[in-house]
Length: 167
Image (cartoon, rainbow, N blue to C red):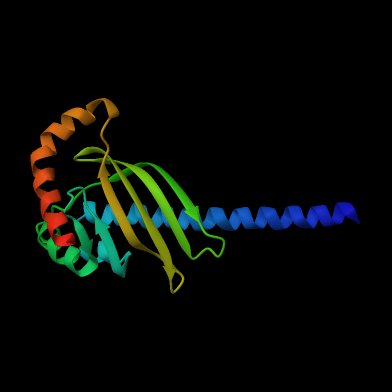
């Protein structure tokens, strides 16, 4: 009897792990297709993979794009057939217990060299959609000092402006 209970528990564990793997594969496909849509300047394919209230955080400190603003900003690039080209070279995906919410991080090969993307997906009508995406330029630790010097003046100006708005 004890062996049967262990067998049943083992089967449920295996089924749960397989379901998790299936969801991760679906998420991988959404993210890969999303990046491919940008590379192919497929506006509808790209934004169709995002929620209506999605947020895209770009590499510039001023880039906190709500979906409609991001569409407006991006449309000329897509229309010109020259959006961006990101290819994931490493990705980690995490899914909640109810399998309707996921978060991820990825390293990307881009025209800016290695970048990091991270984000959140949620399931809408049985489909995974990107709700939040953050793009960062990966900087080797030994080069941070140089980078600070390059961006110091602009960052100081932006910090003053942001602190004034906060008051």
